[in-house]
Image (tube, rainbow, N blue to C red; front, top):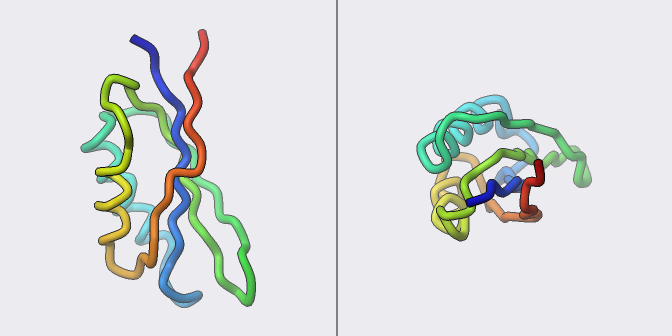
Length: 92
C-alpha cells in the first residue's frame, strides 16, 4: 500500500513548557507507532508567547487513523492537546 504524510499539532499547557523536551518525547512515540522515518518539526507562534509544536512524519496508511497516537501525545507532561491537522497520501 501507500504511505501517508501526517502532521500533528501539539499545544503546550502554557508558554513556559519546554517544547524541546516535548518534541523529544513525541518523536519517541511517533517512532513506536509509525517506525523510523523522516520527521520535520516546526514551531508555530499562537498568541501571547504561546507556541505550538507541529510534527510531520510518514506512516504506512495500513496503520489507519493516528487517533491512538494523538491520545498518547495528549498525555505527555506539559501537553494540553494533540490534534492531527493534515493527512495526505504520499505520491512517488
